[in-house]
Image (tube, rainbow, N blue to C red):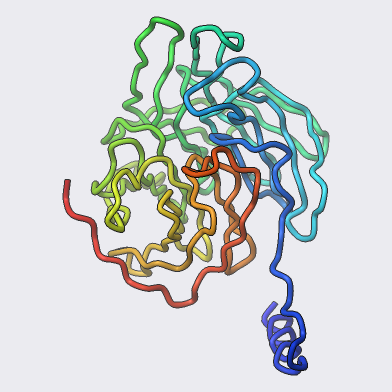
Length: 336
C-alpha cells in the first residue's frame, strides 16, 4: 500500500503545469436519501438497511423503509438490491466474520396522514452474503430503537435506546446494555447495567472497549466506555462543543487504525488522542449531517453516509473525508 502511495505522489510531482489533479475517491449516492438507517462495511462492500425517507418527526408505513442494498467500496458504481426485511429506522448494522447483523429499530404501524403509532422492534437477524439469505437470531428481551450496536471481538453489544410501545403509550428508556456471544452454538442475550439512559447516540469499538458517544442530552458529559472482558464501565473525554449547542445529538463514529473517529452535526471530524485524554480535529464534512453513518474508507479516510442536513433535509450523498495525519487539539467543553 505504501509503495502505491509513493508512486502516486511521484506521478503528481512529475505532472506538467495545468494538469488535472487526481480525482478524489467516490462512492455512488444512496439509492434513496435517508436518515436514521443502518450501515456497515463488510468484505469490501458497504451495506445499508432501512431508514427514514420522510420529513423530520413524521413517520408512517411508507416513509420508513425495509430495503437492503450494497455497493463495492473500491470503484463500485451501482448499488445491488438485496433481500429486504422489516421496515425499520433508528437501528444499525454490524459485521462479524463476513456476515451482516441487524438489531432492533422503530417501525410505524400507521398509514400516511394518520396519527403516529410507532413501535420498537425486538428483531435480530444475520445476513449471509454467500447464501443471500437472512437468518433469525434470538430476539432482544424487549423492543429497542434509537440505540446503537457494535461488535467487540466476538461479542455483539447493544447500548442505549428506548422502547416505543405505540400510540398513546409512554416510551420506556433502557437502563441496560445487551451482550450476545456470536461464537456460541446457542447464543443468549445477557443484560448489563449501563450508567446512563440515553438515545440518539453512536458507538464504536476499539479492541475490547466500546465507546458510547453523544446522545440526546449528552452535551458536555463524559463519554461512557464499556469493556466487554471486565464488564465494567469507565469514562473518556466529552465530545467537543465548538461553541455550539446540541452537538452530541446523533453523531456518527467509526474506528480507524485503532482510534475513535466521530463527526457531529457542526461539521468537524474529530479523533480521540492517542492517550485518550482529549480530542483533535482531523477533518471537516462539506455537508454537515446528523442521524448519519460513518464507516472506515481505507487506512486514512472515512465515508460519511446519508443522514439529515440542517439545511438540506435528508441526504443521499456519501462524502469521503481524508483524515489529517496530525490533528489540531480541541479544548474540552464546559461542564454542564
